[in-house]
Image (cartoon, rainbow, N blue to C red; front, side, top):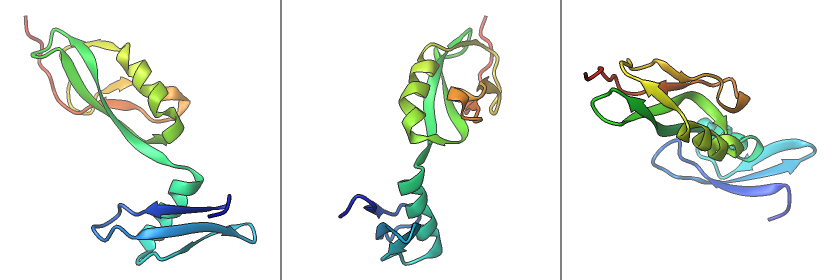
Length: 123
């Protein structure tokens, strides 16, 4: 494969198509995709790969010591490691409800990190 050509295994459905993504006349094209969703996924994965971040943060006064969190959107894949380091330093106080913003605009991505579990305060 050349510099402007990649192969992506699609995760949009159980078929798992191996899609070839290549640049022709300045435009991204695909081959071997069986559906439109696969085409969109493959081009996105080559041009600007993004991920939903799932992690946990420490919580004071909760039933357990860690609170599961996730990004409320996709962030650039290159920012995932930095975002995890940032979240490693975050400590919040209970109570927390599902969907509460735990960290705003992670890594300047415009995406917030939210709680995925409610947690009451334990005295």
